[in-house]
Image 1 (spheres, one colour):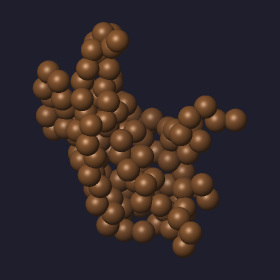
Image 2 (tube, one colour):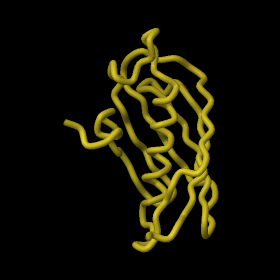
Image 3 (spheres, helix red, strand yellow):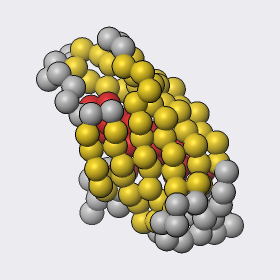
Length: 124
């Protein structure tokens, strides 16, 4: 049994470094909308996951990153295969970060473009 949404969808981190995160997700029936295409919400989940993991990487132990705003443009449909989300940090402030996320398929076809604002807070 899966522990959380990331595990349930099979999302895996492929590469992680300062200001960059690449994640991959296989497209399963769980991720499809009623017409058999990837559900738009899956693109948002993938974008927020990549940006959140990237923002948390090397964050001070007394800090935590939360998604504050997400915008996602769905530009292509997909039925099967896999999705990759490449998140790049564009701004790093004391209390927020802005990330852009390109979601592509295994053939490097652009599926969605997203922007994510992360809030950086003190752990309580």
